[in-house]
Image (cartoon, rainbow, N blue to C red; front, side):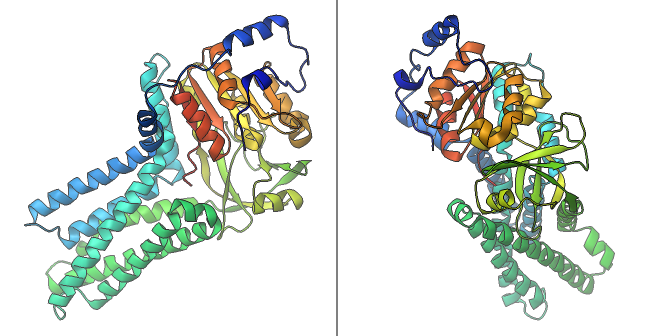
Length: 472
């Protein structure tokens, strides 16, 4: 946990591990003049809360998706005398499921990142700052997922009414039964995804999300063929025509392909563990070269749990590694009993730090094992940056190699050793570096509390700041 301390106590206590312990008087004078005080926050308490806490980009994306779906509902109601048809509801549900799955499919997400970050630095900063918010794409995933449930509940209501009114000549009872089974699966998914439940029971959430999602997808396939057979039996069209002319068939088909594509890349890989300390280890893979800015999911129980880590390209260009720090049961087990083989799934995925390429100069902030994802950015050496890293005993915990990488990326990096000394005032220390290098943005990799604190501290003072949103 990061806590604020009086600037007079700790603002000048800079620890540069592996560098000279003496700091020039000119540097000290420069830092003192720059860090005399933080500027006041913009606006009032209420306007800041609305702008930087409540109306997040994630929530705006969620609201935009739901608004589009409500517009579609109104259009369907106007066209069909006050009520959408069953086909309208089924197609809308299937379309939202496809969009939701695409926002979790690695190749699709990477394409979105590439499109949003392809602009040159000559584009006005205000536009680049907005484009860098692309990592909030989870708002589209959750918005489409909730909208899909809404549409399917509506479909279930219409199907139930239709069956009650036409038990002999309408859709068969199997359609109604599968409706209620699918609704049950959707309820499990939504309940498990509720933030507090997901945080407290993350492994259970992941298993429920996966198996309930697969069950719902198979149920939708069953319904597609039930409806197609009914259409074939009651009209003059062929069975093939009834199947292939249904929009829901194509939406569900593409959703299934996206899901299958990720799981078709399931492989067991050899891994070499480099024990850094009792609190951290580094896992080395050599089955492929890894460009900078990619993350990978690894597991020892592929059907039950997965853990995402930022990859670090090997210095010789052969293979890559990930840093695992003690942050839970799985990481603790991995450190204490280093594995020789682990499972990987899907294609390597772009993450938050990929958007740093949008800026001319940044300040990179990390606490503890948050330095792991940052090492990939340092390896790429494309975006000029100043680095602030707050951690306990950096050399003893993460090894001299990691510390040297940090200092090579920024010879004046501020490595704040929290062992036996006060925790830094993160906002103040980051503000110093912003003034020193005239940075356009701040990127932070830390725990949720510190991330929110620094991002809010920067944005409320007019500085673009980006940190993981912990949505999945």
